[in-house]
Length: 421
Length: 140
Image (cartoon, rainbow over all chains, first blue to last red; front, side):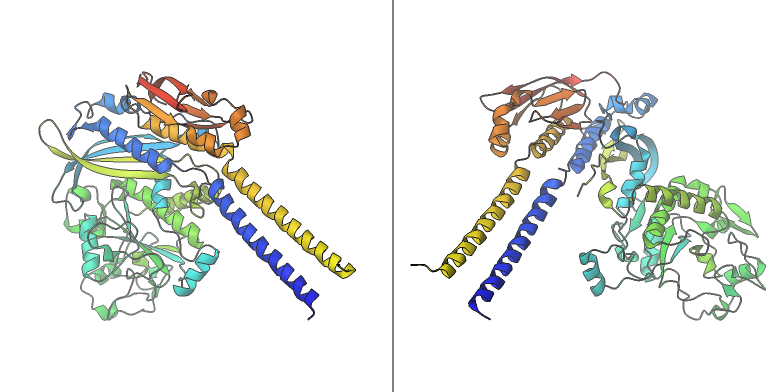
């Protein structure tokens, strides 16, 4: 190569280098200065402070709080104005949501929350749902970015194609979580009666090992030692032929016998469901209501000598379940039907959860609607940029009689600009 | 004395240097234009003022230094535009506008306070906001 050719190559190399540096500078500057100055988290904190001051001062709940007048004029009494400027279609829906709940202090409850004695909310309830969804981790296999590709090489994702719904067969989340932990089982999500979602991202203080992330196989729908797949056991209809199961999970006489003293070797169970499924536990007494009267079992559903807790006891829980299942189905492209969103009873005949009271048709319809809404919102889940920022805080306060309460204040701000990073 | 070949090589070097200089100049201009873009400051100040008013209580006086605007913004824009008309509060919406172009940037604050008065202190380049009290009407 002569000297001139070398010089030409060097010049090209120099220009290439210059272009790379220029591209990097333009990219970094555009990203940094192109992103909105996001103050929504600070706003949510400040609003939370203001509401906390409004509800209680110096450790005492203000006497007017428990009145109907306070509920009716909550925004005015707490000096809140939810008007917003007319940009990014913010005027079309309220960009704030706030909620105050006051519970009796109960040292025996695992989260110290006793009976709820006060509840008020204002603003756009959809923001609460969107905020709850923002706490749900993204599917590890989703996305095509270089980072996610590299991550997937080191932690291979699994193919999720089924969602299994369980009930805890207990009255509290604490008891269920402890049982799961002690038996070395695990689950992906648990939804409390008040709609709170526990997961590996948001575990309760104790027994965090009961939850695993979505990318990990959980032990929630296994067959256990000694069980086997019998010929009459299929996913679509569970225990069929000699012992049919109706579409809503009611066991017939033979299957009811299986629930009791049948030897393990004759249990009917379809193995392998842990591998490709996500398990969701609902805090619900389920079949335990057979032996319990009153309380959550007061309006239990009776069938064939058994009783199951009524799901109408916990509408917030069902609401969260609809949102969570829609979220998962959307991310993993799981069809919303009874072959892919199933009850534990469809895998194991000696299980009856979620029980005959579970409203499958209504539930799946609601999931489809919610999924369509999410898709319409340009992928609320796929692009976190549309999710709001929220703050949930709790504090103790006394009333004038010295009674101890726990006050929960939730504040959420959306005000999402088009390209919030 | 330089030959014809030497002259051609020198010209090539000069062209390369000129292209490089122009390239770097464009790059620097781009960066400066982004960094000193008035809309960046309008957004930042509108949101900062809204946050300050969110946390305000009746009887407070809030002083906000605007000196950073003068440093950051292009001196031509800064010189042409009058900072004492830059901030406008209408109800619970703050609008900040640093140039004659566009509508500025608006951001709302949720605290239903009445900002009774505000003015620009030219000596200290400060905006001063007085919080009078809470508005009587119910929030929306």
